[in-house]
Length: 55
Image (cartoon, rainbow, N blue to C red; front, side, top):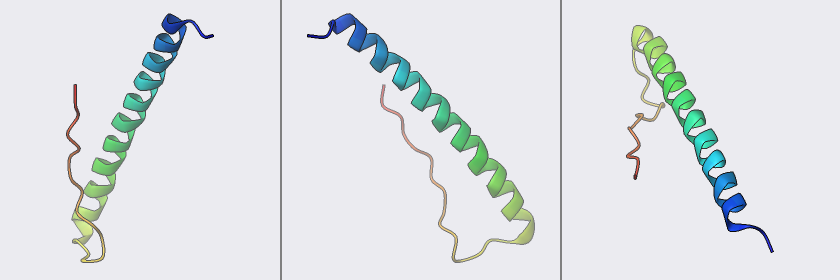
């Protein structure tokens, strides 16, 4: 049987990793949006929406 504290620590570390990935994706989306704004928006591209984070 696994130690619950070890499992909790691993899950917390995984959560931090996923949050960093989400931040990086938000930055990339903003940069891509900035590139597209100069060329005009295409109707084929979906609108980007902000994700609501739960505490």
